Length: 498
Image 1 (cartoon, rainbow, N blue to C red):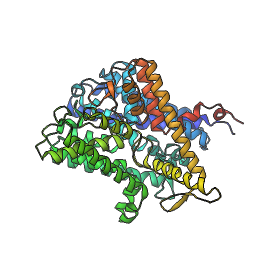
Image 2 (cartoon, rainbow, N blue to C red):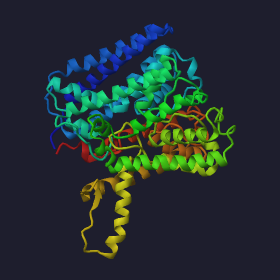
Image 3 (tube, rainbow, N blue to C red):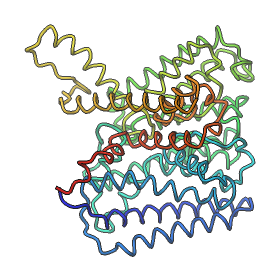
Image 4 (tube, rainbow, N blue to C red):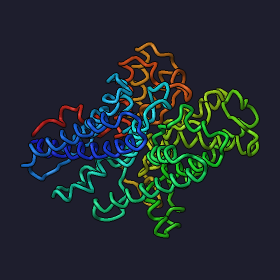
C-alpha cells in the first residue's frame, strides 16, 4: 500500500476546524442577542478554533490532492475527535462546564447526536451555550464530513472516499452521480425540515428560542433540550409533542426517500421495503406500549401529566409513539419515564435501543435494513438446510443481495454485539449495577441518550466516574461511525505501507 498522505489529512482537519469555528460564531451571535454574559468568551473560543484551522491549512497547503481509503477513514475518525476537542472550548471558556472531562462528554454526545448529558440544571445555562449545545447536534446529524464533501471540490479534492467512510448505512444511495451534488441535496432537505419544524413549533406555542433548539435536536435525532424535563415540559400541549413526533419520524427515515417524495415519486417511497418495515414496527410497538399504558400504567407514576387534556386514549398513544420513536430513531427526547411503565415495557424499550432508524437517516443504532437482511438470511438457512444445492439469494426491494453484503452485515452484527458486551463488562468493572451497565452500553453505542437504572430518562450521566464518561464517549464515537470506520484504525495492517 502507498504511504499515507498526512498533509492532506491535516489540511482537511484544518478545514473542519474552520467550519466549526464558523458555527461557534453563530452561537456567539445568539449569545450577543440574548445578552447572556458569555459573548466575549464564546467569541474567543471561536477565534482560537478558526486560527487553529487556518494554521493547519496554511502549513499543509502544498499537499498532493490524492485521497485514498486509508486517508478517508483517518479523516472521518479524527475529524470527529478534533471537532469534539475544539467543541469543548465554548463550555470551558464560558465556565458553563468548567471540568474538561464533563465538557468533552457533553461535546461528544452532541456531535454523535447521542443526547446524553451531565448537566444537572439545563435551564440556568446561558442562551448562547444552549444554542451551541443544540448546534453540535445539528452539525453531527448529517455528518460533518458530508459538509466538507460539498466544499472539497472547490479545493480540487474528490470526496467519494469520505462519503464511503461516513455513510450511515450498509450502502450509500446517491441522488446524483456527483457526490458533491448528493451532499448539497441532502443538506437542502435537512435545512428545509429544520426551518419547517421551527415554524410549526413556534405556531404551536413554543417561544422562538426553544423552537429552533428543539428543531436542531429533532432533525439530527440528538435529543438535547432547553428544559430540564425535556419534552415532558410541554405535556400540557399535545400539539407540540405531535409536531416533534412527526419530525422524529422523518429524521429516522431515509433522507433519499424524502428527496423522492418531494420530486413526486411517492410510489418509490411506499414500495421501499425498509420504509414499510420502519413505519410498521414503529406503529406496532406504539400500539402495544399504548395498550399497556392505558390499562396498566399509573399516569402519575409514569410522569404522564394532564391525561384528560385530549382524553386518556390519546394521551396513552401519544406518549407511547413519542417514546418509541425517541428510542428507535435514537433521538432521546423524554415525554415520560418509560422505566416506570411496567417491567415488560422497560424490556421492550431496552430491545428497541438496538433497532435504529433507516439507512441514510441521521439516526444511530444498527439500522432497519440490517435487521431485514439478517432475518431474511436466517429464514433462508432453513430452506438451504433442506435444499443444499439450491441457489437461494436474499432479496431486498426485489433485488438479490450479494453474499458479500450479507456477510458484511452479519459481521457488523457480531461486532456490534461484541462491542455492547465489552462495553457493559467495562461498566461492571467500574462498580455499576447490572441495569445501569447494560443500559449505559446500549444507549451509548446506539447513540440513544437515556438508558436504564441510574441513567434512566429522568436522570443524567453526571453520576458516572470520569473513566465511565470517557468510556461512554468512546462507545458513542464508534457507534456513530458504525464501528468499522474507527475500529479498523486499531488493526496493525491498516498502518502498514506495503
